[in-house]
Amino acid sequence: MFIEKLKEAVRKILPEVDVVIGYRQGFDPLHATPYFLDKPEQVDQLIWNPLCVQNLCSYIPFLKGKVGVIVKGCDSRAIVQYMQEKLITRENIKVIGVPCLRVISVKKVMAAINQQTVQEVTFEGDNIIVKIPEGPKTIPSADVAPRKCATCQLATPLQYDVLAGEAIQSNKPQDTFEETKEFEKLSLEERRAYWEKEFDRCIRCYACRNACPMCICQDKCIAESRDPHWTSQRANVTEKAMFHMIHGLHLAGRCISCEECERVCPMDIPVAKIKKKISMDLKELFGYEAGMNPDDTPPMYTFKVEEATIEEHEI
Image (cartoon, rainbow, N blue to C red; front, side, top):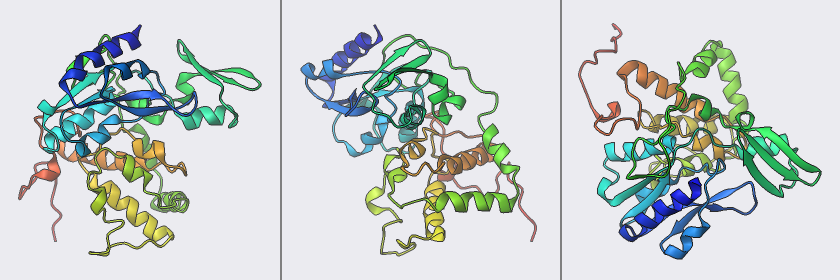
Protein backbone atom coordinates (compact mmCIF):
# COMPACT_ATOMS: atom_id res chain seq x y z
CA MET A 1 0.00 0.00 0.00
CA PHE A 2 1.06 3.57 -0.66
CA ILE A 3 0.88 4.61 2.98
CA GLU A 4 3.38 1.90 3.90
CA LYS A 5 5.78 3.21 1.26
CA LEU A 6 5.38 6.68 2.71
CA LYS A 7 6.05 5.50 6.25
CA GLU A 8 9.10 3.60 5.04
CA ALA A 9 10.40 6.76 3.35
CA VAL A 10 9.89 8.77 6.54
CA ARG A 11 11.68 6.14 8.64
CA LYS A 12 14.58 6.33 6.20
CA ILE A 13 14.78 10.13 6.41
CA LEU A 14 14.10 10.53 10.15
CA PRO A 15 17.66 9.76 11.44
CA GLU A 16 19.05 12.43 9.10
CA VAL A 17 16.86 15.34 10.26
CA ASP A 18 15.65 17.04 13.43
CA VAL A 19 11.98 16.84 12.50
CA VAL A 20 9.73 15.55 9.72
CA ILE A 21 6.53 17.39 8.80
CA GLY A 22 3.70 15.18 7.60
CA TYR A 23 -0.01 14.64 8.12
CA ARG A 24 -2.09 12.83 10.72
CA GLN A 25 -5.80 12.49 11.41
CA GLY A 26 -7.44 15.74 12.46
CA PHE A 27 -10.28 16.48 14.85
CA ASP A 28 -12.81 14.62 12.69
CA PRO A 29 -12.71 12.12 9.79
CA LEU A 30 -12.88 14.91 7.20
CA HIS A 31 -9.79 16.77 8.36
CA ALA A 32 -6.08 16.02 8.22
CA THR A 33 -3.69 18.14 10.26
CA PRO A 34 0.06 18.87 10.04
CA TYR A 35 2.14 16.48 12.13
CA PHE A 36 5.66 17.15 13.42
CA LEU A 37 7.48 13.95 14.30
CA ASP A 38 10.97 13.29 15.56
CA LYS A 39 10.66 9.76 16.97
CA PRO A 40 10.32 6.46 15.04
CA GLU A 41 7.28 5.41 17.11
CA GLN A 42 5.37 8.44 15.79
CA VAL A 43 5.57 7.27 12.19
CA ASP A 44 2.58 4.94 12.51
CA GLN A 45 0.31 7.96 13.04
CA LEU A 46 1.08 9.30 9.57
CA ILE A 47 -1.74 9.35 7.04
CA TRP A 48 -2.02 10.15 3.37
CA ASN A 49 -5.19 10.70 1.33
CA PRO A 50 -6.80 13.47 -0.75
CA LEU A 51 -7.74 15.29 2.46
CA CYS A 52 -4.05 16.07 3.07
CA VAL A 53 -4.37 19.48 1.49
CA GLN A 54 -2.14 21.81 3.54
CA ASN A 55 1.08 23.03 1.98
CA LEU A 56 3.52 21.89 4.66
CA CYS A 57 6.38 23.86 3.12
CA SER A 58 4.98 26.98 4.82
CA TYR A 59 6.70 25.94 8.06
CA ILE A 60 10.20 25.44 6.64
CA PRO A 61 11.54 29.05 6.69
CA PHE A 62 10.67 29.32 10.39
CA LEU A 63 12.36 26.08 11.53
CA LYS A 64 15.99 25.70 12.47
CA GLY A 65 18.16 22.66 11.85
CA LYS A 66 17.50 19.96 9.29
CA VAL A 67 13.90 19.41 8.26
CA GLY A 68 12.14 16.63 6.40
CA VAL A 69 8.86 17.47 4.69
CA ILE A 70 6.21 15.61 2.72
CA VAL A 71 5.27 17.48 -0.45
CA LYS A 72 2.79 17.17 -3.29
CA GLY A 73 3.58 18.43 -6.78
CA CYS A 74 2.06 21.87 -6.27
CA ASP A 75 3.75 22.15 -2.87
CA SER A 76 7.17 21.45 -4.37
CA ARG A 77 7.10 24.77 -6.18
CA ALA A 78 7.51 26.41 -2.76
CA ILE A 79 10.78 24.50 -2.28
CA VAL A 80 12.04 25.75 -5.63
CA GLN A 81 10.99 29.33 -4.88
CA TYR A 82 12.68 29.21 -1.48
CA MET A 83 15.86 28.08 -3.23
CA GLN A 84 15.63 30.94 -5.73
CA GLU A 85 15.16 33.48 -2.94
CA LYS A 86 17.89 31.94 -0.76
CA LEU A 87 15.37 31.35 2.03
CA ILE A 88 16.55 27.78 2.60
CA THR A 89 19.69 25.77 2.22
CA ARG A 90 18.69 22.80 0.11
CA GLU A 91 21.16 20.52 1.91
CA ASN A 92 19.22 21.09 5.15
CA ILE A 93 15.90 19.99 3.64
CA LYS A 94 14.95 16.39 2.97
CA VAL A 95 11.98 16.27 0.63
CA ILE A 96 9.68 13.25 0.59
CA GLY A 97 7.66 13.49 -2.60
CA VAL A 98 4.17 12.06 -2.98
CA PRO A 99 2.51 11.75 -6.40
CA CYS A 100 -0.93 13.39 -6.36
CA LEU A 101 -3.63 13.83 -9.00
CA ARG A 102 -6.24 15.59 -6.91
CA VAL A 103 -7.03 16.77 -3.39
CA ILE A 104 -10.41 17.42 -1.79
CA SER A 105 -11.98 20.68 -0.66
CA VAL A 106 -13.48 20.20 2.79
CA LYS A 107 -15.76 23.21 2.20
CA LYS A 108 -17.22 21.62 -0.94
CA VAL A 109 -17.75 18.28 0.80
CA MET A 110 -19.55 19.95 3.69
CA ALA A 111 -21.75 21.84 1.24
CA ALA A 112 -22.57 18.58 -0.57
CA ILE A 113 -23.74 16.94 2.68
CA ASN A 114 -25.61 20.04 3.90
CA GLN A 115 -23.18 20.61 6.79
CA GLN A 116 -24.14 17.34 8.51
CA THR A 117 -21.92 15.56 11.03
CA VAL A 118 -19.26 13.42 9.37
CA GLN A 119 -18.91 9.98 10.94
CA GLU A 120 -16.51 8.31 8.52
CA VAL A 121 -14.70 9.04 5.26
CA THR A 122 -13.38 6.50 2.74
CA PHE A 123 -12.11 6.66 -0.81
CA GLU A 124 -13.02 4.25 -3.60
CA GLY A 125 -11.62 4.90 -7.04
CA ASP A 126 -12.58 8.41 -8.11
CA ASN A 127 -15.20 8.81 -5.37
CA ILE A 128 -15.23 9.97 -1.78
CA ILE A 129 -17.74 8.20 0.45
CA VAL A 130 -18.89 10.23 3.44
CA LYS A 131 -20.87 8.52 6.18
CA ILE A 132 -23.41 10.87 7.75
CA PRO A 133 -26.33 10.19 10.17
CA GLU A 134 -28.75 9.51 7.32
CA GLY A 135 -26.37 7.04 5.65
CA PRO A 136 -23.33 7.00 3.34
CA LYS A 137 -23.15 9.54 0.53
CA THR A 138 -20.99 8.92 -2.52
CA ILE A 139 -19.54 12.03 -4.15
CA PRO A 140 -17.32 12.12 -7.28
CA SER A 141 -13.94 13.49 -6.17
CA ALA A 142 -13.81 15.79 -9.19
CA ASP A 143 -16.98 17.53 -7.95
CA VAL A 144 -15.39 18.48 -4.62
CA ALA A 145 -11.85 19.26 -5.77
CA PRO A 146 -10.54 22.83 -5.38
CA ARG A 147 -10.24 24.96 -8.50
CA LYS A 148 -6.46 24.64 -8.50
CA CYS A 149 -6.62 20.93 -9.33
CA ALA A 150 -8.21 21.71 -12.70
CA THR A 151 -5.10 23.63 -13.78
CA CYS A 152 -2.45 21.61 -11.91
CA GLN A 153 0.76 21.13 -13.86
CA LEU A 154 2.57 18.84 -11.44
CA ALA A 155 1.28 15.43 -10.38
CA THR A 156 4.82 14.52 -9.25
CA PRO A 157 6.95 16.97 -7.23
CA LEU A 158 9.73 18.87 -8.98
CA GLN A 159 12.09 18.41 -6.03
CA TYR A 160 12.41 15.30 -3.88
CA ASP A 161 15.07 13.21 -2.19
CA VAL A 162 12.78 10.20 -1.81
CA LEU A 163 9.65 9.55 -3.87
CA ALA A 164 7.01 7.51 -2.04
CA GLY A 165 5.39 5.72 -4.95
CA GLU A 166 5.69 5.81 -8.72
CA ALA A 167 6.04 9.07 -10.63
CA ILE A 168 2.91 9.95 -12.59
CA GLN A 169 2.21 12.37 -15.39
CA SER A 170 -0.44 15.05 -14.90
CA ASN A 171 -2.89 15.98 -17.61
CA LYS A 172 -1.57 19.47 -18.16
CA PRO A 173 -4.27 21.92 -19.24
CA GLN A 174 -3.74 23.77 -22.49
CA ASP A 175 -4.19 27.12 -20.78
CA THR A 176 -3.81 27.44 -17.02
CA PHE A 177 -5.10 31.03 -17.18
CA GLU A 178 -8.33 30.39 -19.09
CA GLU A 179 -10.52 31.41 -16.14
CA THR A 180 -8.53 34.62 -15.66
CA LYS A 181 -8.88 35.56 -19.32
CA GLU A 182 -12.63 34.97 -19.19
CA PHE A 183 -12.90 37.21 -16.14
CA GLU A 184 -10.99 39.96 -17.92
CA LYS A 185 -13.66 40.05 -20.64
CA LEU A 186 -15.96 41.73 -18.11
CA SER A 187 -16.11 45.51 -18.21
CA LEU A 188 -14.15 47.59 -15.72
CA GLU A 189 -17.37 48.48 -13.92
CA GLU A 190 -18.41 44.82 -13.67
CA ARG A 191 -15.03 43.80 -12.31
CA ARG A 192 -15.05 46.64 -9.79
CA ALA A 193 -18.53 45.67 -8.59
CA TYR A 194 -17.45 42.04 -8.32
CA TRP A 195 -14.46 42.77 -6.12
CA GLU A 196 -16.26 45.34 -3.99
CA LYS A 197 -18.89 42.71 -3.23
CA GLU A 198 -16.25 40.08 -2.43
CA PHE A 199 -14.02 42.34 -0.33
CA ASP A 200 -17.00 43.61 1.62
CA ARG A 201 -17.19 40.14 3.25
CA CYS A 202 -13.53 40.22 4.34
CA ILE A 203 -13.09 40.26 8.12
CA ARG A 204 -9.37 41.12 8.03
CA CYS A 205 -8.43 37.88 9.82
CA TYR A 206 -5.24 37.56 7.70
CA ALA A 207 -5.72 33.79 7.34
CA CYS A 208 -4.79 34.15 3.66
CA ARG A 209 -1.51 35.79 4.61
CA ASN A 210 -0.75 33.37 7.43
CA ALA A 211 -1.28 30.29 5.23
CA CYS A 212 0.74 31.60 2.29
CA PRO A 213 4.11 29.82 2.03
CA MET A 214 5.68 32.90 0.47
CA CYS A 215 4.52 35.41 3.12
CA ILE A 216 7.65 35.08 5.22
CA CYS A 217 7.62 38.55 6.84
CA GLN A 218 4.43 38.13 8.85
CA ASP A 219 5.93 39.67 12.00
CA LYS A 220 6.62 42.87 10.01
CA CYS A 221 3.54 42.80 7.79
CA ILE A 222 2.51 46.17 6.40
CA ALA A 223 -1.12 45.32 7.23
CA GLU A 224 -0.36 45.61 10.94
CA SER A 225 2.54 48.02 10.92
CA ARG A 226 2.22 51.38 12.66
CA ASP A 227 5.64 52.61 11.64
CA PRO A 228 5.24 53.29 8.78
CA HIS A 229 1.45 53.42 8.99
CA TRP A 230 0.36 52.66 5.41
CA THR A 231 -3.01 51.07 6.12
CA SER A 232 -5.57 51.19 8.89
CA GLN A 233 -7.69 48.52 10.55
CA ARG A 234 -10.91 50.16 9.43
CA ALA A 235 -13.52 47.67 8.26
CA ASN A 236 -14.42 49.42 5.02
CA VAL A 237 -14.09 48.13 1.47
CA THR A 238 -11.29 50.57 0.60
CA GLU A 239 -8.99 49.38 3.40
CA LYS A 240 -9.85 45.73 2.78
CA ALA A 241 -9.09 46.11 -0.92
CA MET A 242 -5.81 47.86 -0.07
CA PHE A 243 -4.69 44.90 2.03
CA HIS A 244 -5.52 42.35 -0.67
CA MET A 245 -3.84 44.40 -3.39
CA ILE A 246 -0.68 44.74 -1.30
CA HIS A 247 -0.74 41.02 -0.54
CA GLY A 248 -1.10 40.20 -4.23
CA LEU A 249 1.63 42.58 -5.39
CA HIS A 250 4.05 41.29 -2.76
CA LEU A 251 3.63 37.90 -4.44
CA ALA A 252 4.35 39.15 -7.96
CA GLY A 253 6.70 36.63 -9.51
CA ARG A 254 6.56 34.58 -6.29
CA CYS A 255 3.06 33.05 -6.13
CA ILE A 256 3.30 29.28 -6.67
CA SER A 257 -0.46 28.80 -7.23
CA CYS A 258 -0.94 26.49 -4.25
CA GLU A 259 -4.08 28.54 -3.44
CA GLU A 260 -3.69 28.06 0.30
CA CYS A 261 -4.92 31.65 0.65
CA GLU A 262 -8.27 30.74 -0.86
CA ARG A 263 -8.57 27.42 0.97
CA VAL A 264 -8.32 28.96 4.41
CA CYS A 265 -10.51 32.03 3.82
CA PRO A 266 -13.45 31.72 6.25
CA MET A 267 -15.56 34.00 4.04
CA ASP A 268 -14.97 32.05 0.80
CA ILE A 269 -13.49 35.03 -1.01
CA PRO A 270 -11.74 33.89 -4.24
CA VAL A 271 -8.54 35.74 -3.35
CA ALA A 272 -6.42 33.42 -5.52
CA LYS A 273 -7.91 35.11 -8.59
CA ILE A 274 -5.85 38.19 -7.83
CA LYS A 275 -2.60 36.24 -7.65
CA LYS A 276 -3.54 34.28 -10.77
CA LYS A 277 -3.95 37.51 -12.73
CA ILE A 278 -0.55 38.76 -11.60
CA SER A 279 1.06 35.40 -12.41
CA MET A 280 -0.46 35.52 -15.90
CA ASP A 281 1.00 38.98 -16.49
CA LEU A 282 4.42 37.85 -15.28
CA LYS A 283 4.36 34.91 -17.66
CA GLU A 284 3.32 37.08 -20.61
CA LEU A 285 5.86 39.81 -19.86
CA PHE A 286 8.84 37.74 -18.72
CA GLY A 287 8.06 34.14 -19.69
CA TYR A 288 8.41 33.25 -16.03
CA GLU A 289 6.47 30.96 -13.70
CA ALA A 290 7.34 30.97 -10.01
CA GLY A 291 8.80 27.88 -8.43
CA MET A 292 9.40 25.88 -11.60
CA ASN A 293 13.17 26.12 -12.12
CA PRO A 294 15.67 26.64 -9.26
CA ASP A 295 18.17 28.14 -11.72
CA ASP A 296 15.79 30.95 -12.72
CA THR A 297 15.99 34.40 -11.19
CA PRO A 298 12.60 35.90 -10.33
CA PRO A 299 12.03 38.90 -12.61
CA MET A 300 11.29 41.20 -9.66
CA TYR A 301 14.80 40.41 -8.37
CA THR A 302 16.47 42.01 -11.38
CA PHE A 303 16.58 45.43 -13.00
CA LYS A 304 17.05 46.28 -16.64
CA VAL A 305 16.86 49.74 -18.17
CA GLU A 306 14.96 48.22 -21.07
CA GLU A 307 12.89 45.03 -21.02
CA ALA A 308 12.70 43.11 -24.28
CA THR A 309 9.02 42.26 -23.84
CA ILE A 310 7.78 45.59 -22.42
CA GLU A 311 7.09 48.46 -24.78
CA GLU A 312 7.62 51.84 -23.17
CA HIS A 313 4.86 54.41 -23.44
CA GLU A 314 5.87 57.64 -25.10
CA ILE A 315 5.29 60.71 -22.97
